[in-house]
Amino acid sequence: MSRSRKLCAILLVCVLCMVVGCGKQTTETTQEKKAVTYDNGMDNWKSEVKAKELTCWYTNEDDKTFLENAAKGFQDTYGIQVNLVYYDGVSLFEDMNQANQKTQGPDVYIMGNDQLEYAVSGGMAEENTTFDEAFWQKEYPETAKKALTYKNKQYGYPVYFDTYCLVYDANLLENAPASIDDILAFLDEYEDTGSTKAVFRWDVADPYVNTMFLASYANLFGENGDESGSIEVNNEQCVAAMQYFQSLSAYLWMDKSNISHDTVMNRIKDGTLVLGLCKSDILPTLYEMQGQQNTEAVDENQVDATQDETAQDTEGQNEQENDNQEQTDATQDDGNVTGDSSKESKDSTNYQIAYVPSLTAELSSTTLSTTYGAFVNPYANDTAAGNLFAFYLSYACSDQQYAGNGKLPVRNLGDGFDAMQSVLYAQYLNSKPVPKVMVLGDYLVDSGIAFDAIWDGQDAAEQLNWLQTTLEEKIK
Image 1 (cartoon, rainbow, N blue to C red):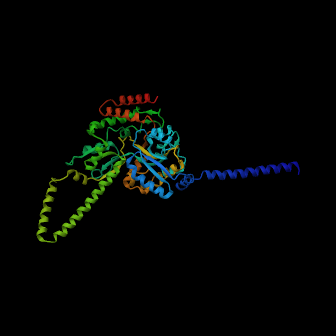
Image 2 (cartoon, one colour):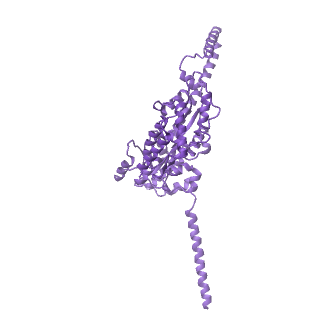
Image 3 (spheres, rainbow, N blue to C red):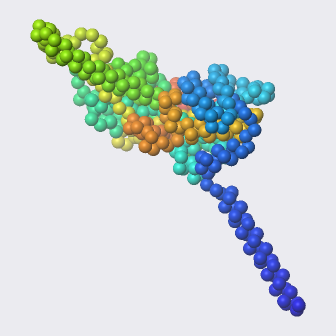
């Protein structure tokens, strides 16, 4: 074979090797980039599980029923027993670390995103490598992804959330107000007909709720709330928003020492409030009230039917019933109904959920939200089992979430949400995740001091400058 022909043969072999190699690499790359689904994600973790039982810690007693039901379903499906442990201590990660050293730490624990920096810094949270970007976008909102992101890595599996919303009486307001200015305009026109209704209330001493006045314009520890050195709460727009906040003090006649979230909830239960800012745990209360009203309506119909049947028995009985009914009607027309006045107020209300209004046409509002997730302990006995159960809680149990603990799931159920749930979920989508930095506690305490002072009439700019300086000193 000539030299040139040998050279050509060698080159041909090299080209073939490159083609085969590239084809193999392409196949491997395609396999590696296979889109994540719930089924294949669970299958991957299931293939690695060795344990026959796992432990899950939870810190909210309300989660008990939800977790018990989930644990039963998980065991039926995967044959793995879940031991649920209610943790009511005050040093979660210190206690978890001590338990880990005795190989008694949890495989999974339920936690709000506000504690994420503590968890990651202490090495107590395993990164979530299960979800790819497409799976996040398809199944969960961007709010949840931001909430569970720390230093560009995702941790935990989102389960449920808390935020706040506007509750309003649709019998008095045809449409929910778009701004607090609209509420004030309604207040100017509203005439109380003796039902002793307050127009607008919220827990004005709660900095978590009051941050809605600042959140649109403040820099609260960076885009994902994980930059402890990034804070700005005293710019021009923040000052304008808090000046508006201050103006409400005199206009609404609200004494912060006498108003709490519970008092707002109770006013709604009694039917003595037109509008209120409420946390998302108001939802079960509204359903209960609607159920009671429906039940009372059915009972009244049954009573009417019984009276009609009884009235046919004797003419004398019929005349007596008519006399009694005429007396009752006359009393109602006079507005002097005896009995429980709060029941009358409650029965005449039709509370609905709406978005938290903006402040004015120029000043917006932004609510905070807390995303609760199932986090995997890296020092657990079987992290594969932990991931399997955490993913199960997040995805497979999402349609059982509300029935279990009265919370809405983070996973988007679409048509699985009813009308009120859809509004509350949309409020969550447009909320800002509560910061997850360790100095969050300092922000809540110090901002609460500044908000109280502004509400009581002190200069808004001076108070925000104080808050800015105080926080900067603490995060140095």
